[in-house]
Amino acid sequence: MKNRKTKHVKNGSSQNNNVESTSDSPSLSGLSSTALSIGAVSIIFLSIFVVYTSDLLPKTLRKSDLPPISTKGGWRLASDNVLQKFGSSKCTVTRKDAKYFTNAEFEKDFRFKKPLIVSFDNGASGWTTPESWSVESLKKEYGDWLVYSGSSLEIVRRGGNGNVESSFTEFVDQLIRSKDDKGEPLYIFDRMFYNDSSLPTTLKPPKYFEIKDGRDDSIFFLGASSSGVSFHKHADAWNGVIYGEKRWFLYPVNHTPPGGVYPGFTQIEWFEKVYPLLPESEKPIECVQKAGEILYLPEGTYHGTINMGDTVAIGIQRKKASTKQEKLVYE
Image (tube, rainbow, N blue to C red; front, side, top):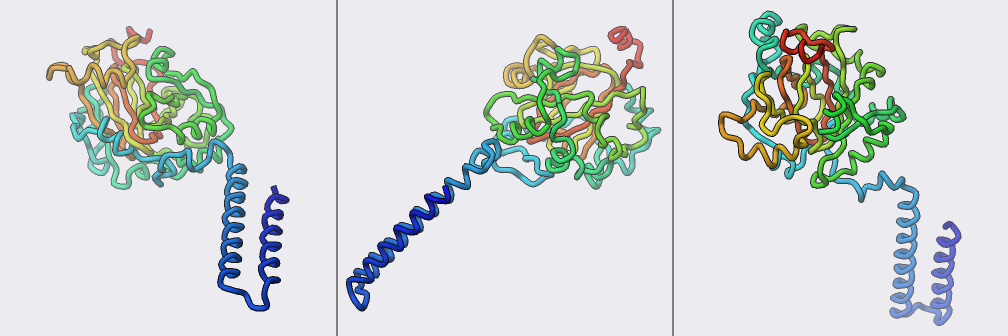
């Protein structure tokens, strides 16, 4: 490639010498020819340089292949198309400000009773270190780690586990290349990643969301817009979103979601085909969880989710059921 560049430069010099030898003083036409020759050489040289350097870029990281990226930890915000399709200002989940919300109030009014969203003045900084969950930090620390992802239905079928294995970097590179209109992308739903990492040292949740070894399970979530998980239920849990947004659809423990659970609809199919037809009495409890908020799920609550923007989250879930009804399911 270097010799090709040199050849173009030499040809340009030869043409310049020929023009100069025709007269003691350069004519206007001679200068024009010289300028055109130099311009042509410059264009050719630049073209070769662009082709040459573009060949050096990894195919998966060429900027021309990537959609626009926001700078929220390196993760993309939801596009206008995604917000128009999945966004909603409707929220029928109680929201509480962490500053004024007490452990006693949580135990009295919410534990095992109804869902709750807790917000923090400093967003995710109120309960973790967001920088530790950025693209750059996660790829640097865990780029070669194996992670497990899956589709919304497959994750439920496998009891809350992803079934597609890849390195973390491979998954993120594919995620960054994904388009909003390309169907349902894979979703990292990994029960080992968080505990094996150093991320637990970054968490400092409120007392009512205290994490206890042996009692609680953890799930690391990462997915692009349109990823998510279909309706399912489990023991008491909370879900904290560090980056992105997550739209929740919830039904109480004794109300099976219209359309059923596995093997029913993917969450996108349910949203497009079932949700618009629901009478008022069958509509879910719902809300969009913003970055920095924590959502509490009472034991046995049916729930399905759709992510908006690249969504990074952590879920903490009791390993065993606590209520009599759910113990029958678990045991």
